[in-house]
Image 1 (tube, rainbow, N blue to C red):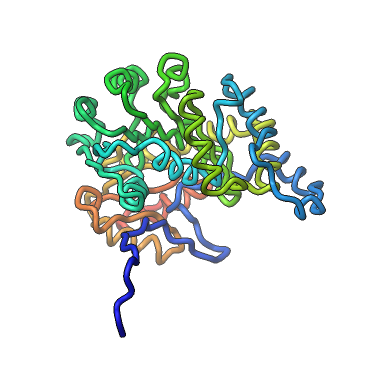
Image 2: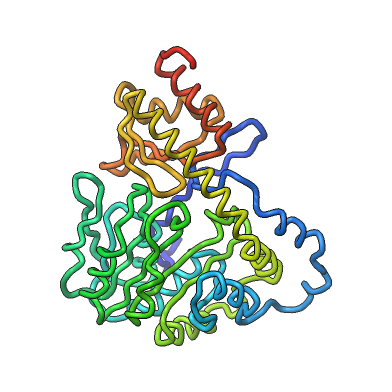
Length: 355
């Protein structure tokens, strides 16, 4: 058969496994350990399905209004998308068009390389240091833009706002995207920088702190100058990118944010307890400010422990093809009950007495 011209070749992002079953503990995709707000469930019960024969909102004004109140930013500086992946994808298209390479860490969200390849954007990966920390000096110099996840994934580490601002201040001629997917679990938000720099674009998601990963809602916050460009891209790609039901339920979530503050607090407490317990077992654990930890077992290989946990119905994330991560496991933080069970299984696999 003859070859077909013009087919794009690209290495896709590999998401975490989505196992099915009732008796599993799923800790491989950083989902929230607790259910959504009761107000979300109540709104779902009263949603008028007759509305679904109409197209969804073009501007998501209802959701942007409640977000503006929560974040204390103007509503016209917020754009909503089909998850933060949608927002980030549009941001790459909108903001990185200079021909110079964009910069992001060598260990960070794997989708950044995919979008750069997909949209023919040159890029350079800046190595994290020996302790897996971001090196601010690596982001000083000519470039086409920056993408920083803070706190970072998969390391869980966060830069203080002062260091983020120093990077922004040194790169005012390009857009600096700050991905704050995990900001509710630790770290300092870059929101205060919006009043000082018009090149900052912050992205967030409802998938982590709001326990709505299945809803696919995210948003971006930036200056009017940036909003004008990314809104044009949105309207050129998919004007109706957020469905009506998703917007309605996301509004309900935002109006009950005290509920989420409590669930995030519980996740952080469990994270710190679980991290300390693993350290007692001889693991090396990075100090996380997210809803997951990056841990390295020292008496068994990461691959063996990954397989042993999987055999017990516990799914964590293992990165065998990434050199600096192949001896580590990324473990999302479940409920306290789930993590007690995980710890029991780990102790058993290590041949230790339980408890």
